[in-house]
Image (tube, rainbow, N blue to C red):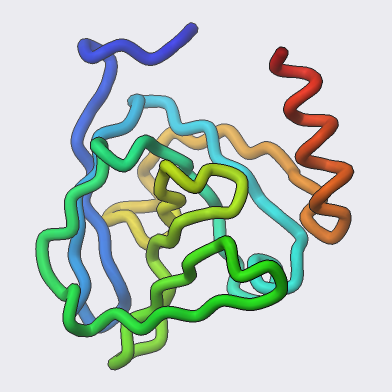
Length: 134
């Protein structure tokens, strides 16, 4: 079932030290992606990809440092105090935001469905994913 406004809710989250805080609007049941690429596997990142208009940075813009690598399309934002990447702009969804579900408040109380993504073979995996959703 496609999310509608009536089954959406507000979540809040941020980095470890609290300097970066944000709110997101997302479904009650979260579809989350676990990627095995080099950066996601090392950081334990769990992706909740949302539209940019569903994301609101409350505080900490001045604490964000940008990191890019490989194609430099993904924009990885880290708190320059505690080093946590709680959200970023993914290469797969340049008009969206990927929020690290582990950085949402009360993460362990959330209703999460986890899907695996083979980010080690990103180009083939994203093409396969796009073909399944056409």
